[in-house]
Image (tube, one colour):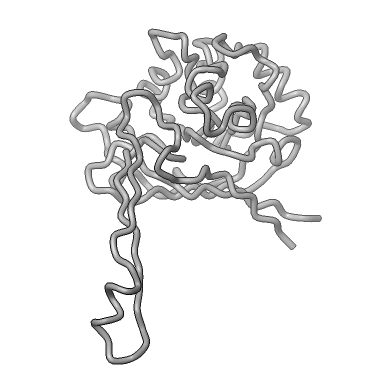
Length: 231
């Protein structure tokens, strides 16, 4: 028996997106009363129109988003096996907002988790940002970020991919963004705007976060989930 945990945030008109990104627009495109006239039965349909940033909702960054190299792969060019795998989640929610999560914080969180971090794992960080501030402007500014030493710690452990429950894995007070730079140089991409990570603490799970196949896209909106196997 398995349990599926939804790790994705809702997509809606007034959702919080990283400052400067295209805001989400949602509208009713077709109504039942408009389409029912096209059929001789009682069938009808309705659809919703969407306009959103490829780095807006729960998503994974493409290498082209992180790296100005013209050969950096866009989201449709990245291999699918990057976007799923066995993983663990570390609790760093005690770290103060607008400060750096350190290498020591990562080590202590790993020890406290009771889990092993293996090469090729998916590594998620529970900062508590979504739980505390979802739907508010504080969500965009009031969270800690992975500093240079913590980013190097991630790379040293050779994880497949990592992710956070905040708009960026970097400290929002930073003007350098060392975590994004590590992702660029080491080609280890990450998920942003995850949710429900508290439910994964202390457990190993299977992560699935396949992005939309946007040709030339610099990120992929994702319905991310974790599957927990019950022993």
